[in-house]
Image 1 (cartoon, rainbow, N blue to C red):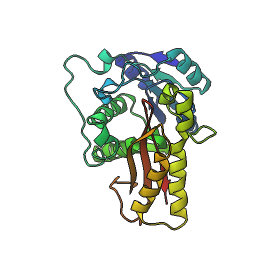
Image 2 (cartoon, helix red, strand yellow):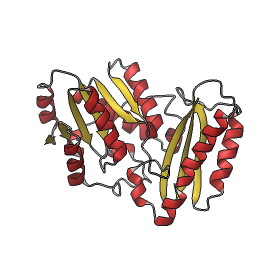
Image 3 (cartoon, rainbow, N blue to C red):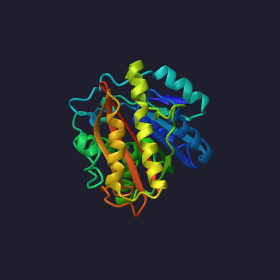
Length: 277
């Protein structure tokens, strides 16, 4: 495993890789959800590249960029166990030099859900992912289902710009009580950690209603909203039942749909989702 910090090093190493390359972009503070992406990449490619970069461009003014958890030595140890080949850990100056002024703006699918709640977030995501794709030139790139909208945005960008990269979406990895693994879970208090299970309970209810034949999307929204509101520590940002491809809100479920939530537990904002057939 090689840990590198500069674009020049990355490009030089990339030239030495002739077969399929799998790429896992991360912001570090790795958990089993990230490692599931690396494991999948390892089985499907000759080489695996992982990036660790907390991208300032995807954080809003009121979001805690400085407080995002970081623990590089631990991350390196975990990636060594998973037999990653190259770890790219660039600085802000490396990724955004002083005269940097080019941005990627994916429209429509970024205007809802996280895009509406976090203006500018997906411009930062799309730009850094496109830049990393240009540098790594992967055959496949791996993203988690937990960040479903991010995966939709990246797929749209790859298709629109003819990047020729296969985007592989890996199922969400959860704790034993259903809470989706997230680097932000570390900020939960013991009481908040207990309360946070309400997201999984709400999504499970949505899935159960769908499997039971409920097609009225508004009725599903109503029932899962009511469930979340019974948790005193939970504050709802949004509850969505949307088209899984376009993320447009549905009134009637007649196509693959996505139930997704953004809920604040104390001061920690959590997102989660679950596909509805």
